[in-house]
Length: 390
Ligand code: KIV
Ligand code: ZN
Image 1 (tube, rainbow, N blue to C red):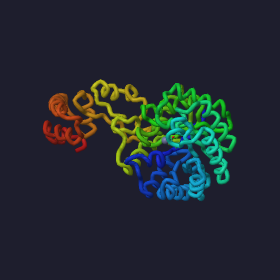
Image 2 (image 1 turned 90 degrees about the horizontal axis):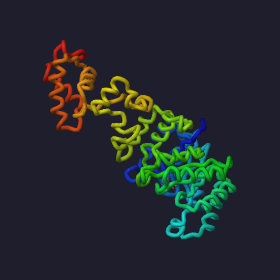
Image 3 (image 1 turned 60 degrees about the vertical axis):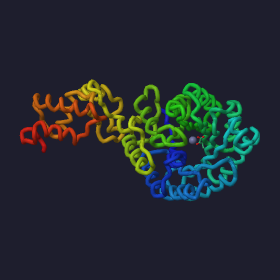
Image 4 (image 1 turned 180 degrees about the vertical axis):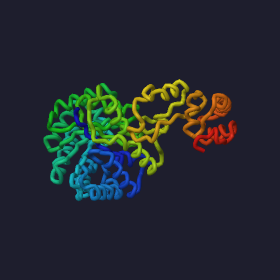
């Protein structure tokens, strides 16, 4: 199995997106959770962007000296020096330099020629080498860049001392086979002189698929965030990437250092700190990710969870598989839930409770445990005979 490095950017790309800003104590707590989760590189901020980002990089570097901490910088002296200063206390500092390489960014945003951008990239990497030998270079908007020029820039920054070359799908424009081809080409060109990294945005809902296609093509670092937060539609979701690798080693023979059983906890901690949680049907960490409502599904699941579950909830830290009882649920699931709630029902009692349950469920999105208890107690009364634990 090949080792793939997980570069977490929850505290940089994630934190800079709407509704996701965090206070310093929250950033420190989140960093602690990410370290315990086992991320390899923790991008702690963009020091030139704000005092808060500078302080976060500095504080995280002090608190977690054994961790590889990254700080973002544009390809210019001011940014590189600010990033280097924020990382002074880091034992394993990484300066992450970026500049856009696509013609559309060069023409409308940077107003620079290809040669100027190439020179800026090389100059920034050379400057950063005075502070650390762990330099990552990102060619922003790589997927809309002329591949020949991208190759030229990648070669030049590696010559100047970059050890990681990141080729972001900044605007989430690429599709898996195309991205895989681009990554494969750059892996071939750079050989073992640099690690090729990927950083995918989810504008077309393809961030995870693109990242995995890139791994198959030879990339060995994935940039991602908890719950997939990040600019616009977000970044590749860390939990989805690592669980896909774990679940499909036949197709994705890669290893990471992530402790899968801490994924749900990490997602919950982040949700506490920002203004939104993952959508209910979000893979791995969403509220319904392990919920089964349809009667046929519930029946199969109760007989053997593997009929409808490809991942065990416990393996990713989800407390227990939950059956949502609703209008599609069958008697079997209701009986099971009743027992879970402490009621042993006779066949006749179950029939009556089930009839009333379906009437209630018809008018609701889902029936809660306390409503089920109430219904049972109305039908059978709370008798010592009916209740086994109450
Ligand atoms: O999306 C992007 O291109 C970025 C770079 C700064 C890596 O976030
Ligand atoms: Zn990004």
